[in-house]
Each structure stands twice: as structure tokens, then as C-alpha cells.
Length: 143
Image 1: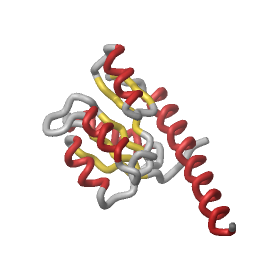
Image 2 (image 1 turned 90 degrees about the horizontal axis):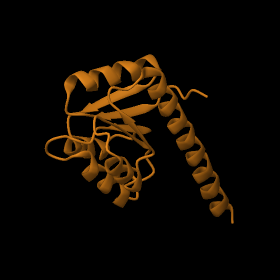
Image 3 (image 1 turned 90 degrees about the vertical axis):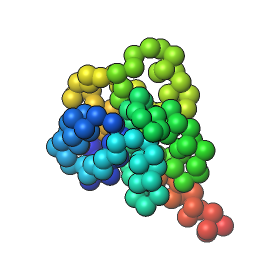
Image 4 (image 1 turned 60 degrees about the vertical axis):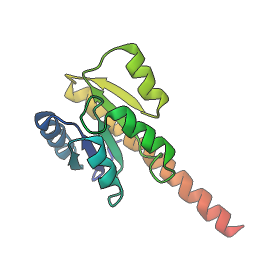
């Protein structure tokens, strides 16, 4: 199931990769917002609600691991699904990202069809999570 009009935060220090990912997200009907490092991404998240984060690991200023740690400790942000897209292919890095809360991990260069499938699956899981949370809030207000 495709979730159109999702807000996607793309965090990568390479402008070519950021723009490529943004173009893919626009083709899928989503609205991309771009950040060149983790610090800028966290600043954006203070004012913008996003549905999904596409995150690189190796970046200056604040790397992807630090972003995942910050998201995990923030009760307002920890529910946002994160797909790590990185050139780092070692198993320790992948496991570390998953343990820090990443929902998925793709290696660069990525294939557009796999990216689309992972993005849409993550957005569907988030939609279901949000519906369940809303139902639980309504139930607790009723009781």
C-alpha cells in the first residue's frame, strides 16, 4: 500500500545523494526536506513533523549514530521510522544502527525499487502505529 504525501527528512552530507533521494521521494508523491548533517536534522525536527527519516551514517558535525541516539532518547521523536542509507557495509555498523532504533538499513549504491519498497513499508507501519495510538488515546479519554 502506498502512502502518498508523506513528509520525508533526508539527512546526508553529499548534495548529490540528497538530491537523488529527494527526486525519488517526489516521484513517489512525498515531500522531502533536506539536511546536510545530523545537527541540522535535529534542528529541523524541532519545528517540522516528519513521517520518515532517511539517514546517512558518516557525516561531519553530527553523525548518524548520534542522530539515532538523540531520536531514541526523545519521547516526541522516537516513534519516527528511520531508514539508514550508508556506504558503510560492515555488520557491526548495521547491528549498531538497528540497536539504536533504525527500522531498516540500505547500502549505497541503493536500488530504486528496493528503496521504494522499504520506504512504503516503513510508512505503512508508521500509519498503523499512529492509528493504534489515536485509538488508545480515544479509549483512555472515554474511560
